[in-house]
Image (tube, rainbow, N blue to C red; front, side, top):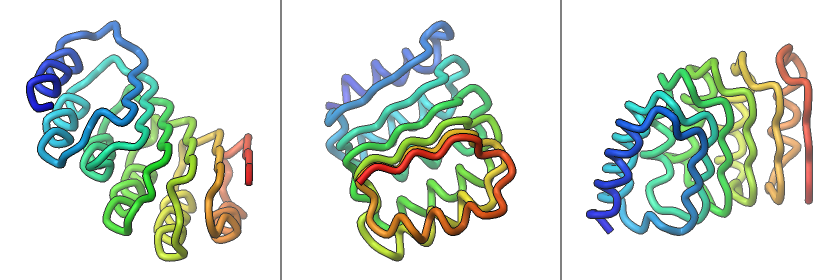
Length: 157
């Protein structure tokens, strides 16, 4: 609910010791996603963010473009659309502090795979990539040929 989102936003902005946030099926509207996203945008402590089965993932991810503390991002059970994938692509290109990306069952179409693959192709920070239950995984892996920062790749069916 929006009241809970407002409280979380304040925690994200004010609490600098919080290092890990996991949000599982608790954001059910774009309005709530916007509130939480604003907190993430100004957060300076969280190093790991897990988003699972939530609405507005594109809005949340988009605010991470300039975040300089987040090192690990896990997206789980989201079934991203192209718009959301575009947000992730920009984060992959612009955010150089991200070191680990885990994508679980969130890419179901060739169009989304192409967008994410392009972001990974231009990424200069990620050292570990985990792809689990991803359709069109070959499209993504192919774009990693010339990536010079990736040191760990895990693929699961």
